[in-house]
Image (cartoon, rainbow, N blue to C red; front, top):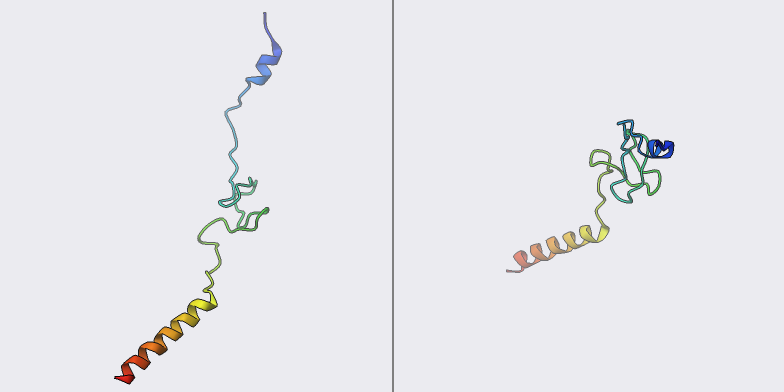
Length: 76
């Protein structure tokens, strides 16, 4: 006996397309050239990531430390 439903369920054309997923949220998108995730907006590669921004407090702390270092040298 031959069951047609089993043939349809087991059919494999051998071409399972694998779509890229977002590095952050895992959203699947259908364009290999996608630069930003359509769901969360995160960039998909290091080449397309914008330059990292330094927090203002890091710059402020660096200036204060340099000032204290110069003050300590001049004081002696």
